[in-house]
Image 1: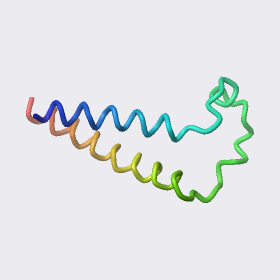
Image 2: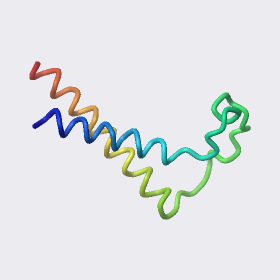
Image 3: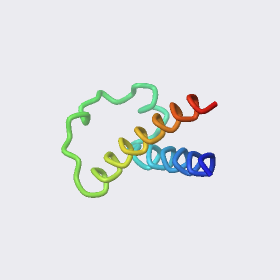
Amino acid sequence: MFKIFYIIVTILFIVVVILQQKNATLGSMMGGDAGDDMVQTRRGGERFLHQMTIVLAVIFILGGLYAMIIA
C-alpha cells in the first residue's frame, strides 16, 4: 500500500514541477534568461502550484526516509 502511495506522490510531484515551469525553452534552461523575473509575486494558480510543490516535496522526502528506515 505504501509503494502505491509513494508512486502517486512521486508522479504528482513531477507533474507539478513541470507545470510550474515558465519559458521552458532550451535557452532559459541553459541560463539564457537574465533572471530578472525571479522576484515576482505569485498569484492564483502559480501560488497554488508553488505550495503544492513544497507539500509534495516534504511528503516525498519523508516517504523516502520512512522507506529507508523500514527497509
